Length: 251
Image (cartoon, rainbow, N blue to C red; front, side, top):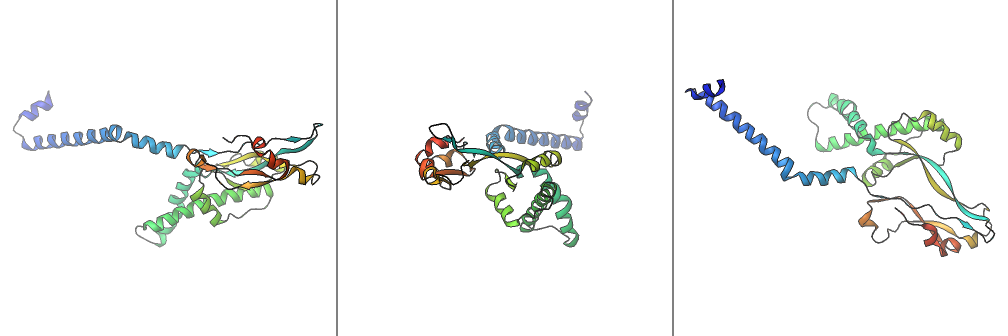
């Protein structure tokens, strides 16, 4: 073949070039082997951590009825608009590259420090989310809401996998407005959560008891679930005495 014929000649430069090409191919193959075989398990574990989030969701609380079947306590649907920050990674990246970082470089020529880059990334995330909060609240409520920067930053650092609540306790009319006007917004979801309701109001409240938010993490939950949605425990009365039966099993 032509290539081997050229190599047989006493052309020292061609032989050196051929040797460099072979060395480069060898390095490339070694790198591919290292990534695909040597450290593949590490990348697989990292992918699992980034892709999956274990979130504990409390079970709907059971109803309470009297001996005649009259309803004393039940769950009613509570509609709220949530924002999932993990669905906005591309928007965060675009805002950082094309807006925040570009504006920074116009007034600060040169390379940004690590601290400056981290601050700009946080600013980009806040701008994206605050803009979405503004749009959603304007369309549903008729007046825009201002996102609290500290609350947002704390939520992003501590509970990124959990949804960020935007608007709570939507009316049926507001639910209809959301379905009509907010379906095109990324990361925005309408979700339903059970809310405890006592049809008879304060009647026999000392017998029925009440609910209190549970902040203590049960034994074993830290090993199974990375995040926990708010749960409530019965206090006093029927709610407290039969709390285990009424709470069900979270998943």
